[in-house]
Length: 98
Image (cartoon, rainbow, N blue to C red; front, side, top):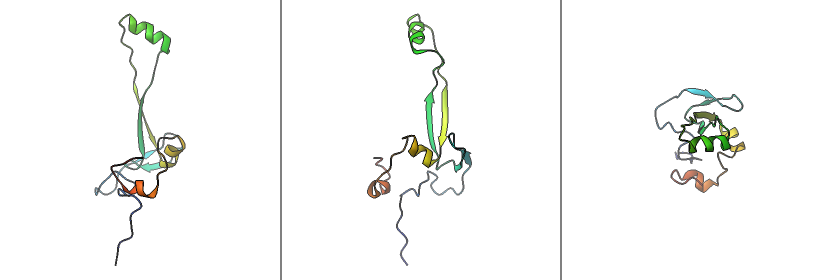
C-alpha cells in the first residue's frame, strides 16, 4: 500500500521525530498551539521617542531597547503578513520559502 503524499515536507512542524512538544498561547487570539508549530517573532521595543533618542546617542548615551518575543498561531501569522500563502510546489520544498 502506498503512503499518502505529504502536503508539506515538515508536516507543518519543526519538531523532527521527537514526539510531542509543549503548548503555548498565541499572542493575538490566545489559542493554544504546539510550540514547534507556532511562529516566533522577536522585535525591539523603543522606550524613547526617535528624535530624543537621536540627540541622546549624539551625546554618547546608551539607550536600552528590550526584545519583545511574540508567538503567533498560523491563522494570526497569515493575517498579520508574517506568513504568506504558498503554492503546492513551494510548500513541499523545505529549503525555499517563497
